[in-house]
Length: 169
Image (cartoon, rainbow, N blue to C red; front, side, top):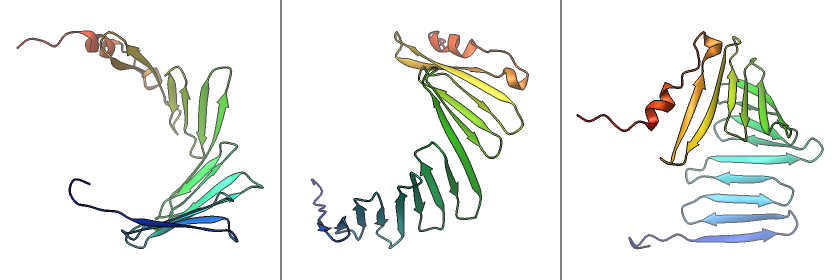
């Protein structure tokens, strides 16, 4: 580049494993395979890998720090951080409404819709919902939040304030 930095790498394909490996001059190594698995090592030697199980339709990742996660074609998944804290979920997409709902083992759920609306229910049953509105005139996206699940009312003053010109000093 314009600062004299260079980067080089070597790629190779192993027909017996169906894997392509890429070794870079900075010490990183990436490998991806036809069976959906892959592996990567950063410049410090930390290695993480992902395998894919065709029978379950799930990918499982083991990270160098001990954390893991899984993602499945049916929308379910889980993660465990390096301290052992875990969370699992399931995801359902409703084509009729255009909304994707994630339900977590903690009792929480969140819904994200194609039209910019959504909601979240926390583990105590409190609900928060929102709608995103794109203001073509200003080029801004306004988020209108409804806190009715927390005892408040719909507050559109944020949207109104966003449309008002700035106050003059």
